[in-house]
Image (tube, rainbow, N blue to C red; front, top):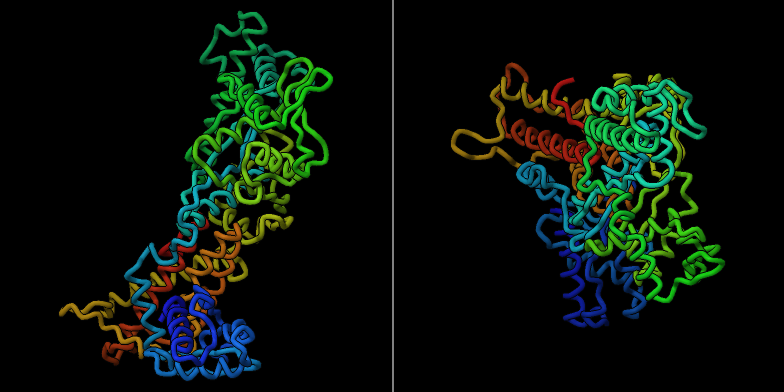
Length: 555
């Protein structure tokens, strides 16, 4: 019996109480879904609900009296072993071993689909994250946003949302010209201009640009800067794509800021906002009245010299997302972007959207890795690609995903690569590899889930060991954990769940034999436990996939 099936049984009991007049409520006053949750203490049963406390006052009765009535109605439900009333009116429900154990077959048959739901069905979301300048390598800060952003995309999709992962390329403005001038200086062997870009990676770009465009040395300076800028930009962006690919991060859309300016979208955005009544002129500049929407001051869109601000591009980009059919817009920004929250929400409101519904800004905090070395190419940063080469993509992604985004992190690099139970990613991956080892050994001993006659050899009532009740209960929670992680935008809930599942599995493995002893015949209990073993393997694999982490079969 799944939580949803138990919830339906509780709803049926409530409806029955209303129908026979025991519960003095109209049917439409009953909750559409009765919430059940795992008790904190195992001896309190498999599931608990406080629905009696929620409804008793409305019905003119006491919570305990209502709970006792519901307990009587639930007691005859197939699959329910016992219903106890606790405290002022809590219902503690214990399932029969067979009803609980049936979940193992459900999970194995569902495969990769187990844990997926329609909790966010109908939501269409654009999720923008990383969005680094294409003027240098991705660094440790981008690494955190990459891990969290990609995991969040996967989790939202698993909960039924239609999600587009988007990278906003900041390829417009004076920074790009400084970048081009820096590369050209390397080509000519001259001093990098003030405020320019330095490091071996710039010299590398210069060598590549020169090899492909030898004529650049003879061009006038402005033409040389433009050529160096465009060619180096293309090369640097290609490196960013390759590094992200090695990290398991892939984007559906790479959106160029430059296209907003070249297409006239920035100018059009200003006029659209003016038509909404939120733009005014003052001192020769064009302003957006963001103070109407809780911002601390109005923002300049077009400077007095006619140049658009970054804020104008932000407005045009927001409108682009709206025009492309994304009611939901999620921005995952770095710790230095707190000031963007009110101004982006103001853009949303000025564009006619509801900031409470159409835009979310998630701020990630800083991260450091002890033992990490500064990049030899860039000099003053820790590169993402160096972290992946040193620690491995799995360990980096998992370690970053297991903490809330708004928590500052200081991770120990050497601890992240240790193969020990103190390393969470190893602990979880080892649990998966152990389930695979059980399968291999079971095949050698002729323990199979499906017999030659087509029978599955599965008797869920045999899963009656205390560790099996705990393990099955944990497996039951997975779909709800995924939906909750999606709704709260918190990938770390998946990681923490997997660690709990791994702990329950290791304990079960130590106390319950899947394989018969050498002088023992294969029995249904062995086949049934193999189903449970494979159910754990599937959930571990599903959960690790949501975090973008591999599920190794051998370690």
